[in-house]
Amino acid sequence: MSIKRKACIVGAYEHPTRHAPDISLAQLHADVAFGALRDAGLHKNDVDGYFCDSDAPGMGGTSLIEYMGLHPRHMDTTETGGSSYLVHVSHAAQAIAAGKCNVALITMAGRPRTAGMATGTALRRYEFDDPSAQFEQPYRPVIANLYAMCAKRHMYEFGTTSEQLAWIRVAAAHHAQFNPNALRRETVTVEQVLASPMIADPLHKLDCCVISDGGGALIVARPEVARDLRVPRVTVLGAGEAAGTTNGGRIDLTTSAASLSGPAAFKEAGLNPRDIKYASIYDSFTISVLIALEDLGFCKKGEGGAFVQDGGLISGRGALPFNTDGGGLCNNHPGNRGGMTKVIEAVRQLRGTANPEVQVPGCDFALAHGTGGRMSTRHGSATLVLGRE
Image (cartoon, rainbow, N blue to C red; front, side, top):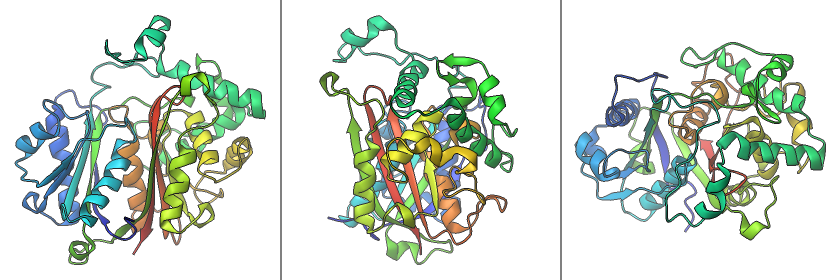
């Protein structure tokens, strides 16, 4: 069953905080939930579907449903890391198309900055029964090192340079200066990116995302409900999800599961990369963006460096404006899960409500893409193609 035009995003809200030492995780979820409901012009009693993942406290979705006083008849707690919230939009659209709910609420929140997490160096928690633990835990993997392997391999195979990767941070920083809530609003040059401390060769500090608290929420509704609301309608046109693994050691470090989720989303939407006016691309690291752009079909494999250099991703200047809120590199990466904010900024662009300095003229089709987990080992990819009604 296709979900094309079966559901609309009618509410979107990003928490303005980037540091929340005095706000509980449950309260952050509630804050963004009611912010999205206000944006849509709906009441919590209108919600009959609820979606979250393991960033939810307590007994996950059940605890938050109780905390917020919701009464859903459908719920989903799919976990694919930072890409979960794009999967949730797809699953919400599927549930709506199947008659399981009419108005779906999706929330995420996190407090890693308050917890003191360091840039790119926090260890992932390995469960004793995780089948990969016995092979990986002895080597003490850290997030930055795992992505650095992808960058190093891409450089080896295709001649990609650190300067080209730096252009991705330059673009994100250029956009972030116009976002009053962005954690890092200062513009940077390629030279400044390369002069920043090395975290994991070849990734410098400014190749890595920020660490922030905060969260976001979305409201996905049946088209008949959306038509009665006084908000611009953003329609779900296509969605794809896929998993990338080590494949028993037969792994290509330069290719992500976006190579599967992207084509699926475009096929369902009946569009191709040339139709996209704006793209929100998960940017945990600059290399994440470059590989995703190739895998999604915006350029050929190995040509990502040339595609992004010299401002190729800067709104009003480049061929593909990306992450016009500053993205995870500069604006916000709440809970180390940036997929939610990718959808929110895509909604702003399609509504025409992004900052005027970075608003893409005539933005009728947008893409949001999330990567969850670790691209060099196992990860989940999710892609949404969205359109303006």
